[in-house]
Image (cartoon, rainbow, N blue to C red; front, top):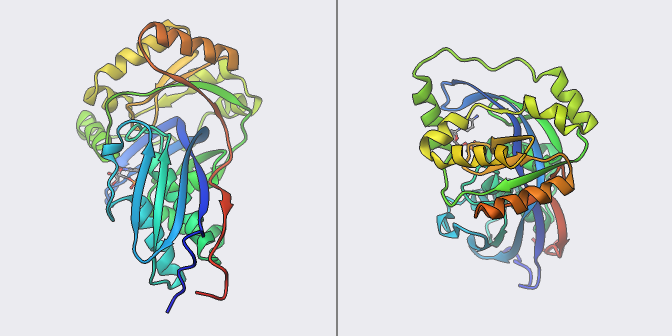
Length: 314
Ligand code: C5P
């Protein structure tokens, strides 16, 4: 019989949210995904996942708004991640997962994917597993398109359905996140984009602009701003027209640019520097919009503390 370890054994892992500085969406593939060219950046909004030994798999959540949207059954991507690690390690016990959510739920900033990334690391640690980086990245890709990047963190150019990542260089950038009271399920966003495109022939560019990469590496937000683009924006606006109002507000209050984050409806405003970001947050408040400063890039998913089940006892 497997020793579940004492209930005092727990592992805490943090995973960041993400924004897409460039999100080019190509045609719908035969597997139901769209071909992408995207540039991910991890931002300093953190999901904190705690796992403890248990006979079965369970999940609880705390934290921000819209928590009622988070499924608390096996359809939750964090439980899928824990089950995948259990299978790989040949374990028949489960894990009690608690997620403290700070990334807006259903907002296009990768919160669910971050939870999955954190749970992969946490369960591998709890069970003193031997899964290495490549194996964890493979499991991550099987769970969701954004999960490999959220494991990795930093800045990356991604291709395929978003799971093929190549690290990129970036100096710090400062943003203002303007969450929406609404939420948007990613598949719904892609489906609306297909409707809008109505069979039009679309292709993804083969690479991101050289000037963009140069501005990113130099940490020059003014040079970067004109290159930021999100092909999903028309879909997010069509589903939630107030997204257009938020983007307009961002430009009116002096952001370098305003864009939809991922599939939306969260919007992000690019600031000149940290001080400018704080001024933009104040300007949002005068328009009755709650917003917050985030900085990027930050590290990927990482262990905060952990008392694994002693090895040799599973
Ligand atoms: O990979 P993930 O599970 O996060 O994707 C959720 C859904 O988003 C997919 O089932 C698909 O409908 C859509 N999607 C897509 N193209 C991508 C990524 C996601 O159409 N590249």
